[in-house]
Amino acid sequence: MQGFLKLFTPIMIAIFMIFSDYKFSYLDSLKQSIAILISPVYLVVNLPSQLYIWISDQGTTKQLLLSQNKQFKAELARLKVSLQDHSALLLENQKLTQLLKSRYQLDKEEFILARISSIAQSRLKKQIVVNKGSNDGIKIGQVALGADGILGQIIQVMPFYATILLITDPTQHIPVKNQRNGIRGVGKGVTSHRGKLMVRFIESGLDVALGDVFLSSAIGSKFPAGYPVGHVSHIEKQANDSFLTIELTPTQTIEQLEFVLINNAIDN
Image (cartoon, rainbow, N blue to C red; front, side, top):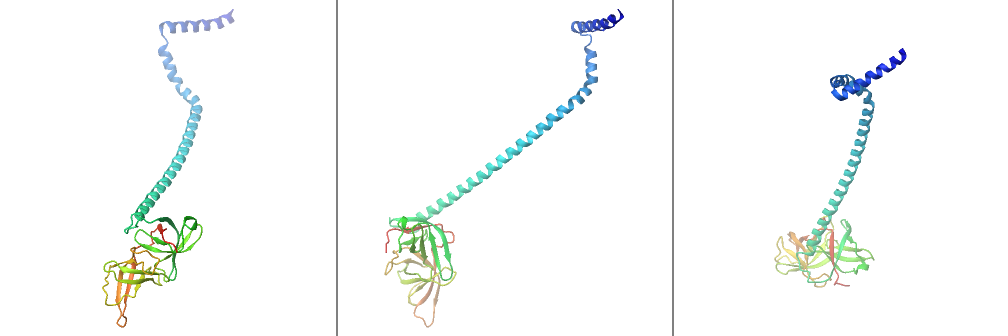
């Protein structure tokens, strides 16, 4: 009997307390106090799982950030390359526009556009190679032009490239005339690294001044007439020489030249 009372009494007390709390809320303050007392215990018990979740989140966030950073770097590199390509295209278009809107008149002749592949310049040899050849209609003897004047003549042709002998080469001769007064002479390349021409066979008493522009002359030459060759940068008169020593600086330099026009109307 006592055993039954020991078991039944706590059950009845528990049922009474549950009923009383449900109906009258007498134990709310007590429950609140107990919850406050045991909250540290709850936090301590729950700490490992919360710590695990935090570490997992940190790892995921770091991986996500690293992945995003890698994607952004790749995108930045791609955009830089695109920008470089865009800038290169703009520069190329500017060069082509400058070439096609030359200072001189092209007389509606047919021209082939070629890109410079290599440049060979020494005291004794001044040549350039372009990326067009016999497959593109290039022939020996045709004239190569830049935006500012004559470059030279085709001297060697292969199927996919051609070699141009520059007017500054020591073996190159080109008939010229003074644009201002029509005085004629012969331009010849100079054996030096300066990239100059000398005008020969102009008598010392004739009117030639610094800055005068000499044009190509068609007399006795395969060069067409009227294209700029160079401007006078030095004049010297020797006491015992009946001819002037005239130095020309080419109007067309090759330092930043990328494209050339080859006159397709001139054959051997």
